[in-house]
Length: 73
Image (cartoon, rainbow, N blue to C red; front, top):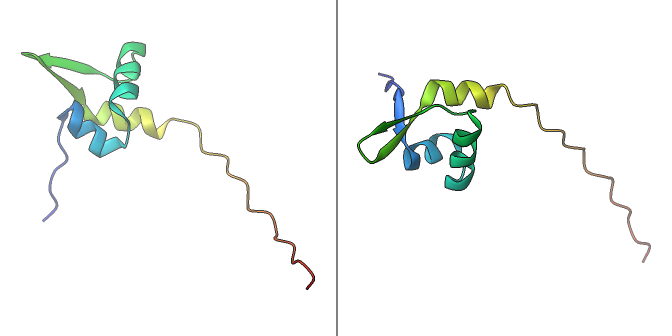
C-alpha cells in the first residue's frame, strides 16, 4: 500500500522531500516560488505546489567527462 504524500510539510519536512536547504526554502518563499501557510508559529509548505515548481526548473546541463590521456611509462 502506497503512503499518500503530505499536502503540507514543515520546513524540515520540506527539506527532506525536496533536498533544499532551510535558507533556500525561505528565499524561494520570499520570491513567491513556494507557497507557505502559517499555523501558529509554524510555517507549512504546500508540497504539491513546491514539487511543481521544482519540476519546472530548467534541466541541469552536465558535460560528459573528458577522456583521460594515458601517460607513457
